[in-house]
Image (cartoon, rainbow, N blue to C red):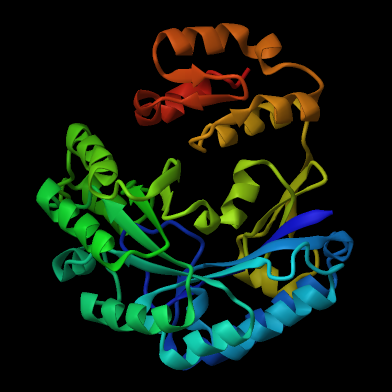
Length: 376
């Protein structure tokens, strides 16, 4: 089977104030031992994965956490194990992405990644102003990013930059400054996410005490729409993602959005394979010490697959492919959701052509509401 691979590295230099991802700040004196123990377990999981042995690899994505915090030799060992335990790759050069933060990168690592066959690097910039980087708990400053980006450009021709908007005390002018910088340096891809206050983060507790000055909803939407105005030479292909050309769209993420097979390795990693879903335990001790760490193994029902196919597909600008829906489920999408599609179209939240059903610009602002209409 064609399969995407996700590898979770849960370690970071420090925990950002907004972050609710499954990650841990490293204590320097213990980090080498922690990395060794984690790698040993991760390689064991890969070596013993029956589903991987049936798979042709389409993409590989190292996420976290901060994968670039590991010694680069560890990344090579993980890639080697994936290749040795699979049926090979679907293409000569599959898309291989590594997420990184500026403070954990240097020329040696970047050069090594390139030599290992990694061909896409994602760098978490988030903001260009040091005052905002400090405010959200980032471990780097803007100069560090600039230095790292210049090095990365020498080795990679597919770089993604992550940005966050609607930060505390951020105004429209601050955000526009970020966008003009992206226009200046012209990465092949960028992602822009609106800040969400997640439960049990530092920002969550600060917000509970009214200590965060957050932009209101109107300003947040204005910031979102400003992206298209300033970066009009980029093509938006998903709610939060833009690429300079189609070939730079993230193929790995499109596997998720198109409901294709993927296998997740590492702490808390999720998998979807042959209509089965499961995830690994979120408990680090259990992951490191037990062999039975898969949880919530569920065979997807036809209805749940239909719902996921639609609300994941609607994230993409092109929308839900009607022909692929019919091929996958044996019926026309309008046979099941005629009333919902008709109502949402009248409300100008959805649009439809011969091959696709997709969100309008207005519908993208109310995406969660639109998608909820397809859950029966």
